[in-house]
Structures are given as structure tokens and as C-alpha cells.
Image 1 (cartoon, rainbow, N blue to C red):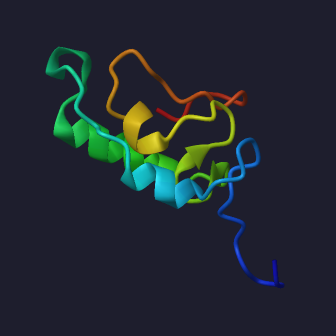
Image 2 (image 1 turned 180 degrees about the vertical axis):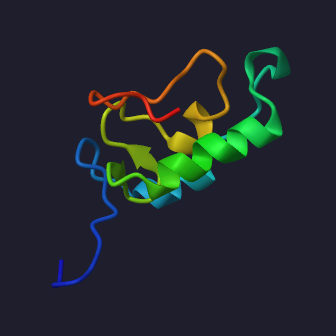
Amino acid sequence: MSKGTVDRECKSCRTSVLEGVRDIDFEIDPSKTVEEAMYEERLSICMDCPDLQYGTTCKHSGCIVTYRAYLKSKSCPDPAGAKW
């Protein structure tokens, strides 16, 4: 990797993280998801978080943030305190 480039390879499986995100089917039971406005608010917080990795993954949970932000049962896993 050259200086100034971003490592987009999963450290566990050595595949492209962005490639995997495109293949995920986000069909989720609507009764288990938050309203669109809350989803957008949560996702915005995640996208601005310094612990977001590869532009897709939470450093603390390992979850793809676009998926985690939709679920009512999930919260921000930041050990310093949940941001949402």
C-alpha cells in the first residue's frame, strides 16, 4: 500500500470490504427497524465517527453501520458512551 492510500481490505478474511457491502441484501423485517428519519440520524453520526473503518464498519462492534443503524435492538457500541 502506498503512502496516503486507504486500506480497504478486511483484516480477517483479506477481501475487499467495499465489495462485500455491495453484495449485502438489506431486507429486514419492518417491525424490527427504526423510522427513516431516525435511521438517517444514526447513520449520519456513524459516518462522522472517528471509529468508522473503511467507510462502512464500526471499529467497536465490527458491524456494517448501514445495517446496524436500521435495527431497533441496536445502539452505538462506543465504550466511551453510546452516540445514539
